[in-house]
Image (cartoon, rainbow, N blue to C red; front, side):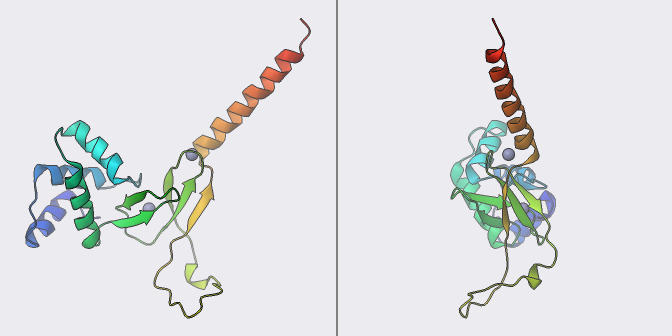
Amino acid sequence: MLAPADLTRHFRARGLKVTPQRQLLFKLLHDNATHPTAEALFATASAMMPGISLRTVYQTLNDLAAMGELQVLQSGNGATRFDPNVSEHHHALCDRCGELHDVYVEAVDELHVRNLDGFVIDRAGIVFGGLCAPCQSALAKKSQRNKNCITNKELPQ
Ligand SMILES: [Zn+2]
Ligand SMILES: [Zn+2]
């Protein structure tokens, strides 16, 4: 995604209005690696600029996507998430916390895809499922605690 100042120029060149609300959204999206939903972005933007409407957020996201400045992603739970990283990349989705982060895959065009049935592939987006590092350590701590509880019960009174 372009820098906020360049986006402002592009929007104006297309005859689109650039309000302070839109400029805030450009800033919040630039270099944003969290793949926010429209609602998450709206929550952040509202905290900084009370009165911004969800409609403005949707409209701005749609305009940016139409200009090729944002990738639109459908995540596992059906939520639509937005990605300012428009270079070729793929994603790792955490089963526990829903964190989605960018991963890079080599030789994607060499994958053997079966059962295409005449389908012509235009692009590939791979989502790897699993556990992010913080969730792995949270789960490890939890199971450690559970073990400690059992050990304590087994101790003679
Ligand atoms: Zn996680
Ligand atoms: Zn991404």
